[in-house]
Length: 565
Image 1 (cartoon, rainbow, N blue to C red):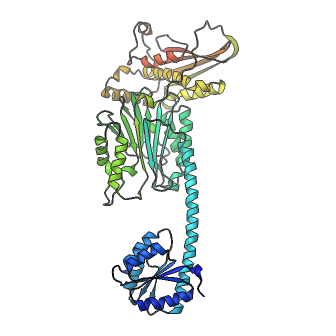
Image 2: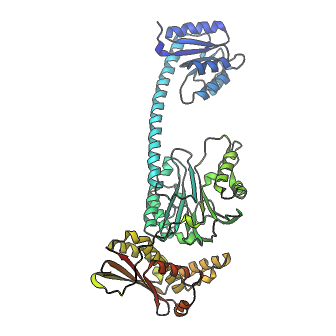
Image 3: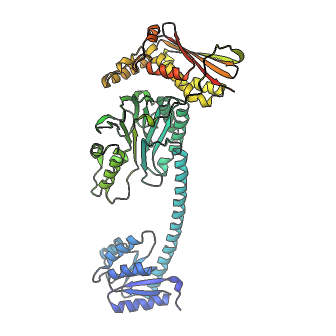
């Protein structure tokens, strides 16, 4: 009596006698049978009847057994349907051709009942194992999808969302070795990091979590990009196995949209494009090893500056974009990328690049590597608004001694080369005072005062140099050179916190060893954007109750006040 649970057996043979003999044997084994007389009929019945096993003759009219098997196997890639070839041939080459076509076994004519039964049982065992493997694979795949969702949320959920920032990461697998991180510093600079771990998939993605933690913690506290990259490198060097590393691009867009700082460690060029003409203005190449390779990595050595203009576009990408291949095994390449940029309609560079990439790759659905592309448009709306605290009216400052404390710190030349004191002092103030809502304003004030003291005081730089691209480059080259060789000079911070009725004040006194400037005459003239303390001092005046200069102009005193009621 037949056992319907064994399912259907599809017999494919153009000889009726062969079909009848095999049908008789299979019915005794417990199969229902369906028959086809050529390869094309077999393909049609396979889709219509969903057989559990197929017996395929080799030589048939219309479509032979080899091609029919190839098409059936392609259609059942996620479901195991055994194909046993029926052949009168005994030579090894013919049998190998059956296996290469996708066959799982072969049965030599005339048929032997015992051998047929053994082969059926063998295929049944393989089918059971295949279902178990598919079940485990489905479970693993689902777990990986959940893990990737949690992973992405943990790493990228805090990224900046802004219509003037476009970004896409296309992973080659479930997990991506590429990553994109973005955040604003307390001084309103935009920090944007793109990275590419060796390879792709879960192993490549494991390093993304510590990179994200270091980046966010240090950016929030106002550490410099050099310190952030050094922190990431130290973390990765201690945890990555030999042979695995992290290519990184860190771009810092200055809050006045005057310039960008670029750190490129083992990644493709960072591209700056004129927003109106789409002419490529700068290609900032990699100037250092990827992170996680060298414990003595010094981010200052790979720092590059570039001036930017309003509406310029900054493009960052991983090598998966330019190394993407089409069906002819050609690379998309840098030249095609540059042509896409040049051909793009206004404000559509990002979309044009992906349109051209998809057309180039055609029907290829499997990527060789993760693909990442970022576009930042340099407009004021890409930066956060200044969070100005409640305006405090000037007072006579009748200060009580309740809650008063003072702090004084001196940073000499050699220490100024290595340390940015602002995050240290701001963090200390955050610990001493409940000032979290004032963090950005206070950080901005202290940063502007310190940059003026260091750049224009200790280093003796003149902002008038930055009147054109050549002068701009000269300014920052001179700055880096003087800072690298700095072994004298000083900046002194004196902070005192005072309480008056329902308000508290921080008196910031910053003194530098520079020559100062004629601040008395400067009071009589309107500050220009390129003056020694022009835009920065005007910003401080907006945020502080008062700003004064003393001595030779090398002592700045600012009073920062806030209500406590």
